[in-house]
Amino acid sequence: MPHDVTLAKLGERFPDVGLAPSEFRDNRRIVCPRERLFDVLAFLQSDCGFDMLADLTAVDYLEYPDARDRFGVVYALAATVANERLYVKVMLNEPDLDLPSAVPLWKGADWLEREIYDMFGIRFVGHPDLRRILMPQEFAAFPLRKDYPLRGHGERHNFPVLTREES
Amino acid sequence: MAVHPNDGFVATRLTALANWVRKNSLWPMPFGTACCGIELMALGASKHDVARFGAEVFRFSPRQCDLMIVAGRVVMKMLPVLQRIWLQMPEPKWCICMGACASSGGVFDTYAVVQGIDRFLPVDIYVPGCPPRPEQLIQSIIDLQERIQREGTIGGPSLADEPSSDRMPQLVNHLPIVSPSPARTG
Image 1 (cartoon, rainbow over the protein chains, first blue to last red):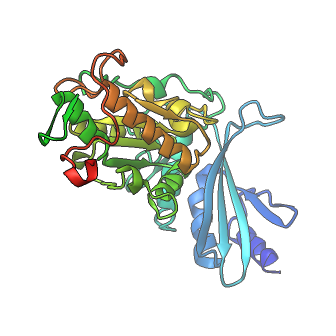
Image 2 (cartoon, chains in turn brown, red):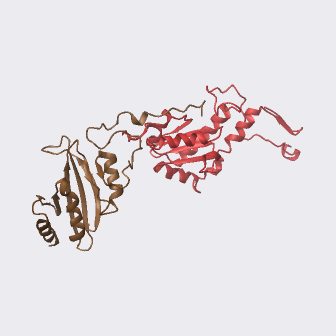
Image 3 (cartoon, rainbow over the protein chains, first blue to last red):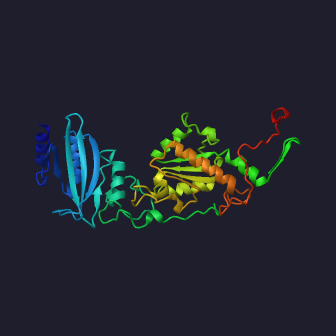
């Protein structure tokens, strides 16, 4: 089982980090503390064959039952040679919403991290170009946070009105 | 309008003549952002063939267009673009608001989607539907042509402020511009 090998390598390399491996319906997951996140990701890429960042997304656990942390950022890794997949999760709380950027490891993290920054306000330190990617640059909120109302704060109506006479 | 077939000329008002010319040569600006844009393409293709109504010359430069067809939802990031394109179009110009999303936001009542472009732009014709059939869009063009003929002004805004049918003389659709030959008139 390649997954057991990966877990053994991780335990050997990071004996002091509680990675809390778990499995649910063939999804293998570990939870990584933020301080060691970049080291763990770099080790998974260089020594465990995870050469592809399949997805990178975030979850807001505000008012979620039994949740202890506000945000979770999920790295979906894939090892294309060994056909292995692994989810690495890191939990975050306000006001300290900084994460190390994964762009040095996987180029594909660029736009994914921009999207998370745009929607959740989680900043990726070391990202080459951390701008909003979906919303306009002057947009002030983070719309996928659970405390942001569905209809917004009136941003969609904040435009000049062109009339027939002046256009 | 006075027609003098035997003398070889017609007398009409300049506004009525301009409206008649303009309404039969609408150049649409296809602002297609969603599935309505697909129906808009079908409108221009061979099956529905909007060339039958003189509006087949789709131009992607707003400076060459006089009819903007907003087909699809407009999000708040796109609205400044839409307004800029509208301002770039020369007068006289008209706007058809195609489909539920462009007219009201449709089902997308979210923070990002503008709830009807008529909040920020002048709209002349609304087309209901999700998306509307090309036949509906053809009807909207016919309706717009009637409005241009009825309410169009030659020097002021594209359409008069108050719809009034008696302000200008009606011009029949089959107006003979050139005097018919004596043989055809009998």
